Image (cartoon, rainbow, N blue to C red; front, side, top):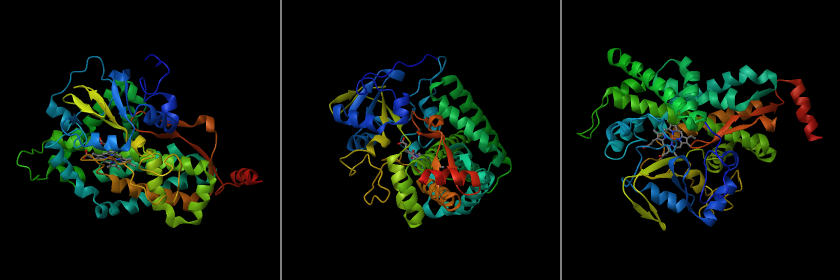
Length: 420
Ligand code: HEM
């Protein structure tokens, strides 16, 4: 792949895979929002990028004119044959579906992610967090992205789906190739997607013969109220595909961003350690400030909105992260306020596709961060030059070296020297 050319004007030529956009998008959104709040680029087959809260919320409501059947803006491989509309919609329903398929596929999974239902994953997540910390605490240092944040969501998802827990690391590799580093490499992306679908197809086949007490079996035997709904193995594979992809990269990014923030902002870390009850409020601010997910829509018809005409076939980014920094809706939006009281963020999206897994995501974040603060205590991010952010459509730190005082005398000394 050739190196992309640098961006000269963010309002006419933005590039969501540009290193500057990935590392620190906040000033770029500010500029775009002021100069051209629905920007356009020809890069990556072209797309529109709204940065105002009200526009993003309004565009998210334009269903079915703006369809969800192709939510990535990255180009397909050269010999890619476009699947039928139905195949596109069930590929990762409900996120890739429009009504009516969206409605009944979403209803199939909502009970699993209801506030009370997800509490059954709390003990598993807490044990996991402790086991992970046990494995590195004596070193006094670790990669908080790789050894902690990245390890939690894939294990929770494998547990929830009822598949072999040993698959967690493989899930991470596949998801990274689908949504992360492989996003710009269509061949890698398709290979990972095919491997994940093949794995899920084999699991679904096993459940048809030997039902288990797990989500895959529940989905296979569900009876939607919609008379036109048809539960086929392909539908179940598509939903499971989404749960793996949507449930892993997103939450790992959010836990990682929170650790990045606390490890580079000692005052916020000290406040949270002194006031642990503040954590749920802080989690909402982590979600707002570092909102990771930007999915896309495709125009099924010409759509005139906000002074631009989105042509049939054009992609539109649902830039929920930029919406979360709009001064029209948030006071001092580019400031991280750990006890922010009014915080109606859209990190989980807006409209009919609003995140179905938000209760589970919040639970994982709260448990992972609480256990980290209890066990690790004081820590800081080190080796700033090695930090790596992933971006594009899901943003979060992928390498994050930290130093902490518990467990290792040498690290304790290094941190103490810092305070002198
Ligand atoms: C902090 C973590 C997470 C964030 C920030 C997040 C964000 C989002 C966003 C912005 C959307 C809307 C996409 C769109 O409009 O096209 C979405 C949809 C979705 N998310 Fe999440 N998500 C997170 C975690 C999870 C988890 C843990 C799960 C489940 C295991 C999950 C499952 C889903 C599903 C099923 C949808 C599609 C809903 C629909 O189309 O009706 N997400 N998520």
